[in-house]
Length: 151
Image 1 (cartoon, rainbow, N blue to C red):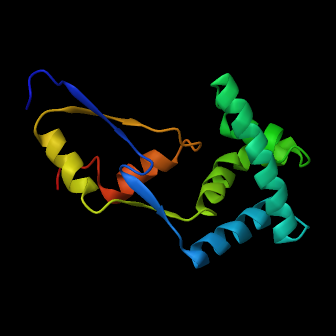
Image 2 (image 1 turned 135 degrees about the horizontal axis):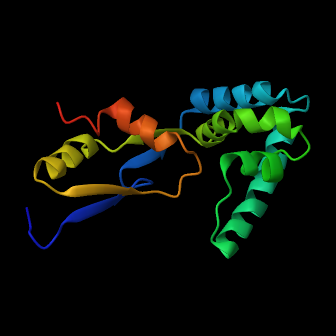
């Protein structure tokens, strides 16, 4: 361990994890998102509307340097025309499906090995992410065993 370096922060997107196209996975995410909210319009129209609203939200969030909570993202920005009392409780699931409609997020091949080795060497590790979901990172850490020191 380098005594001058106490902590290492790792970026998630395109550093630890990458998005790979998986047409079946992406199509299922779209279908599940629409079913979850009970969307009655065509998939094309629904996602065209969400994409447009997403761009407006991202522009605003980059200008203000503030990210909305998942509940606010869906009730105020992405689905303001749906009842908030229905959308708010499912906002976390909606966010995951929204992310999944872009593709499957997978760790780079040596990520688990490298992270575990750095931890074994005594470095304090942290994650830097601008992901919009509150559950994606903890779920990924658990699923891939990144935080499991027993392996």
